[in-house]
Image (cartoon, rainbow, N blue to C red; front, side):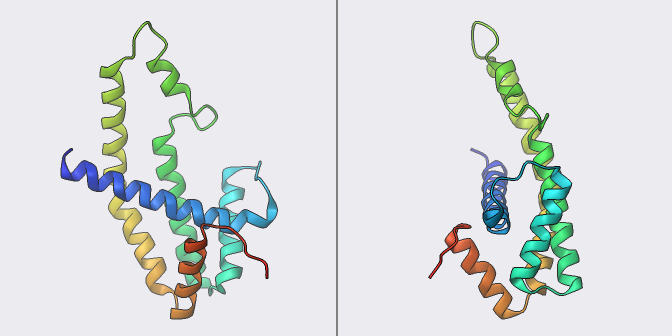
Length: 151
């Protein structure tokens, strides 16, 4: 596998895991979210802001980061209402359409690779704006994987 593909995939999966954990941490006490994606993003940002005690500038950086993550997700999922549509198209015939699958993967990787530096910078800006105690809280939440521990 080419190094840039490997780096892109690791970056994508790392960011996905990070924001999955952050999203789970933000919404864990509210059950499953069935609303609008923009509402969900705003809820996650508000919840994380309260938990991390963010100031207005930090909250703005987190919101910008969440917006970029949402855009990156939309790049990967062609139709958010039907995430399995692309796979179904690949297996609709008598055999698996390997050529179309390779094209689909290449298009997704290219789109992710183009936006990855912007996403990495946004996360870096947000993380670097946190005070040491806020960074420790975020690391602890990511370590738990969004699971809540009651004592």
